[in-house]
Image (cartoon, rainbow, N blue to C red; front, side):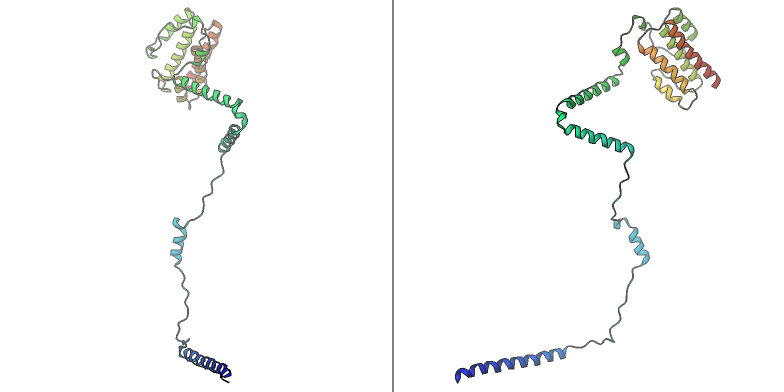
Length: 248
């Protein structure tokens, strides 16, 4: 009998706890105030200012796009291919053999060429044999085209068979004609190519460039002239002077 009464007691206690728990929860729910829907203001949508929005769109601080690189030009593609070819060649096993020494030879040759150009070495005279008749027998650094008696000196050079000097005098007289007309600005030590560039907008450019090439070939070529070659070159100067007379 006492052992049977224990479960009954626990059952009554559990029932009382559930009952009072339900009462407490109901009272708590009843105490929560119910909002008055009529007193709550309706939601209002707020839109940004269109002008401010446009300013933000145009601001560089909010531009997150990536610039697209324009297509490469022809020369950029060309040098890119050259670079890729050299990279492949240098990375190959054949570079340790033949191509290695070819590149060394090109590098040394380019360096020597640049040094000789900076020293203003005459390549024609360096690799050719000059004849004895081609020696300069007078000083050229004292020449002043405004003080030279061209007729007398030309007659003297032709009588002596000094055709190289005669061609030089012909060219100097040409420079004087152009200087007197204000077509070039003659100065001692100025290069012939400078005078050619000064005539780039003149119809005399091509004829003058031709006689300049003839003079440089004769004077810097290091070879003596025979009478027949001299007559051919002198005729070219005469034709230039005739063209000059027509444009003057």
